[in-house]
Length: 360
Image 1: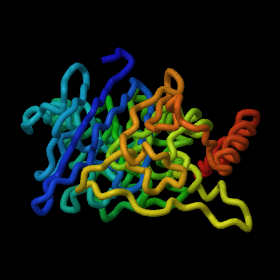
Image 2: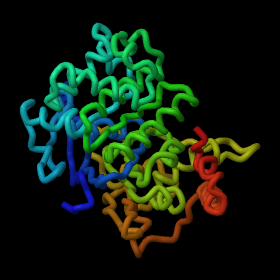
Image 3: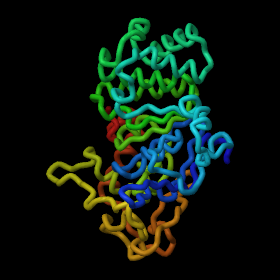
Image 4: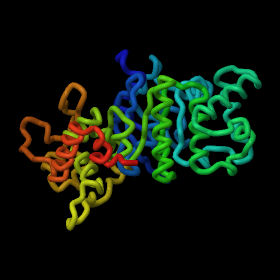
C-alpha cells in the first residue's frame, strides 16, 4: 500500500442473494483514496456507488457478502472483517458516513444533541459532561446557531438544511480519518446545497480528513473534488484528476455522462440522453458492460472485457479504444465543446463552475 493512500480497494466483488438468485453488485472494483483529498465517485443509479461505500463500514445487508478482493485501510484488510466487534473500532470512529436522507438518519425519539453525544462518548471515551461540550462545539462548527438550544431539540424541529448539518455534525464529532458523503445534497434546494458543499470542504480542511464523495451530479464533482472515479455496472471504468476526466475523458461511458450535462446542450438541438438501460447484474456480463448502449462499440467490446489502460501516471480508463490496435474514434462534439469551455475557464477561473455545470 502506498504511503500516500489511506484506503486502497483492489478487485472487490460483492454479491447479494435475492429470490434464490445471485446479484453481483461489484465486479472487480478497484480505486485509491489519498490522504487529505476528496475523491468523487460518479455514475448512474444502480452502478454500485452506495454498495461500495457500505463495504467500508461493514453495513451490507444481511443477504450481501464480499466474495473476493481487498479493502486496505491503515494496513488492515476490512474485507476480512466478519464481526461487529471488529467494525466497532472502524465504523463511526475512523470512517464515518453522511447519509442521503437526513430525516431517516436521525432518531425522531431522541434529541439531536443526545444522539451525537452518545456516539462521541462511545468512540472518543469522553464522560457525559465533556462529550456534551464537544457536541455543542461541533454543532457550532457546522454552522448551527444557538447550539445549546438546538442540542435539546428533536429532528422534526429542524429544517431540511439544519438536519443535514446535524447529520454532518454526528459524522465528524468523532474526528474520523475518512468521511464518506453519500449524495448528501440530493434532497436540498440549490442555495442550501451550496452551503453544505462549502461546509464539507471547510471541515475537510480543518479536520484533515480524506473525503469519498458519492454523487450523480457532475457539477458537484467539479466544485468539491480533486479526483474522480466513474462507475458503471459495478466497476470503475475511468479514474483520474477532475481536470483529466473532464478535459480528456477516454471511456465511452464517461463521454456519455458528460454529454448528458444540460449545460452542453445547443439551442435548437435535442438534449443528449444515454439510450437503453444498464445490464442486469443477475446475469454474467460478457465483454464491455456499456457496449450494448454504445453506438461506437467495437466488435471486441461484445466479446472480451477491456483491461485498465493508462492514459497518464494519474489517469486510466477501461476501454479497448486505448489499445494500440484500435481504430481512431474521436469523442462526441459535445465533449469538444466542454474542452473549449474548460480552456476558457483556465484563462478566467471565475468561469470554472459554469463550464462544468457547477454553478450550485
